[in-house]
Image (tube, rainbow, N blue to C red; front, side, top):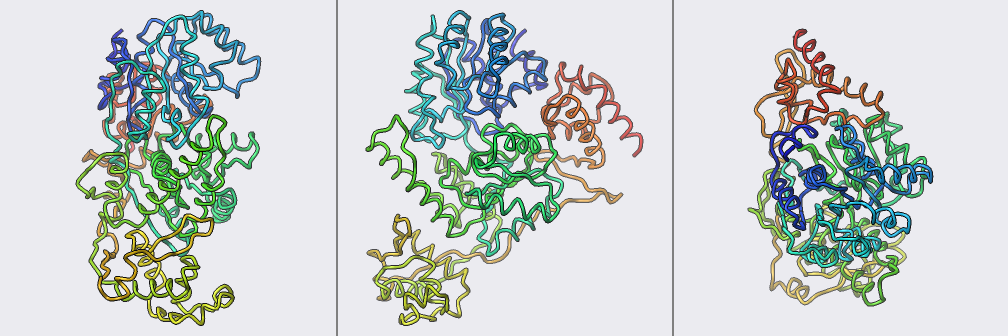
Length: 617
């Protein structure tokens, strides 16, 4: 069987996506590879297809239990024998899996990096024919990556103990130049074929808002997306509990995930979300790495994350199936303070010396600044993210909140002078909130305690909306007219440019929103009044009623087989069925994502629903 036959039979696709074939061919020819491919681009197929064609076994090093479980479930559903070895297995299950491995029952084995160097595992694997070691989430090997795992540094120690060196493949979705160089060096990739298909996810719409009431904004968004599955990320356990509880009281199917819950509750809540029993997951960043749930239609960041890498990875859990999805970030000044607090209390890894730990901490502070800039830029949000990873575009994507908003330049020199003057007359001793509240003429206890009501600028900005005072203050900090310190409680300081504004030598002009977003996508309705949905890249509209019938059948099958619904078929596959309306096996096999193995399992059931659904129209 060749690569294209494997692709169609087991995975249901007629052709490879961008970059996949190069990776597959390189591995099959014995070359090491490094693939930098965005979430949803099909990285896993790049090593799974060669694994089925190579003579021996492929070991996939994977960082999280949930990632392994999802991948193995999907492979077994497709008719491919695979297994995972991690701490979720009992001692008996682990021994059984090793026994089956020795008997050659598996072509692909997922293993946690911590298990690689155990004596029992090394002893067994050294007797097997290991054709390839594939490192998933390869950025975890770099101290400069956002998810550094010291156990990843032992991968080469493991490979060096094998009787002969297998092909090494490495894949990740987010890696700066430094991280890419680290991956190649630390995995000792020999003359690797390197592929970077780009970081852009065109199906994702990026939005940033600075709401006064975050929960009200979140609730409004969720109300507009009741049918969709979504993730809401929060910085702390306390915020997770608060947001989840409020959503539940509003009648929404929400669940929660954070490190303060028991293992059993985390597992149950994660499965409730993955199996579509709950539509909304409210979580800290402890949730989601490696989750293959393909039908997440939105990701809301209730708080700003600490860096662009983490944000893009978390936001990238939306729209893995390639359909239009949204990423909304809700910013507040307290988010910066909270993240700074976390950075100041970073735990030093065992493998780090003090100098390295300090360097990494400084790097994290710089990343936090760049993340903050993202929340205030008026330029294209997508372009900002891509530039961070070393890609340069046109600075207009047409699918982010900035590109969909009209801006105009406004002279804010008067407001800027008030803010700078207040900082100067208060002797550069206070943070952003105190400065803004002083200009507003606030009677808050803190203002009175600090005697800021006696400051010459007290109440001078009471005619300026609060949001505008904050907006201009952030602009001044971002453009070096003022400085915000990196202390536990950040203080606003003057810079070399401050005096030029106060003396009237320099005016301050900033872009401000002229009006609400010009384009707003709305659900269309057909002649019968039924809601329809336009699929990205296709002109046809989808009958929502038929689509819902297929989803209900998928859910029934998923419950019977105890697998997540998206492992049966993705939303994208169901939508393609609605568009093609196949009437027999040959036509069903034309649907993207329907291979021979899945047709044998589910094909007739879905054909039956399609036929009855079409006949009732």
